[in-house]
Length: 132
Image (cartoon, rainbow, N blue to C red; front, top):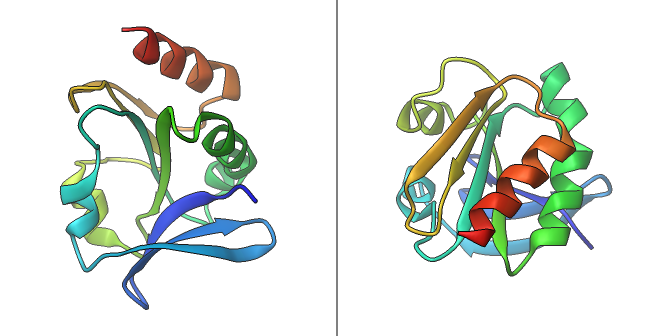
């Protein structure tokens, strides 16, 4: 079962969700631990900062779920709900949602996009970073 990962402030754990609901407990985190853990060195990472109830974010949810499953083991595709985790939005310095941030294998930020981002653009960026 594929899902998109995000941090839940209510119970303080990093969980995986799918359209059907909660599917997998991944790791225990507290507060800003997620920002300290992502991106992982040696792994290409895309972090999508948004909200489950924002319209463009809802449009991106199935795309992120698909890409998370497709790139599992090759790249991290992570969703963080900044309405539920306002400190994470501040930690990443976002100005609008959704915002996608791309990191290379050295954990260096190499790209940032505000607003809806289509599957092809995300895939192209991930493939380019994986080829480096």
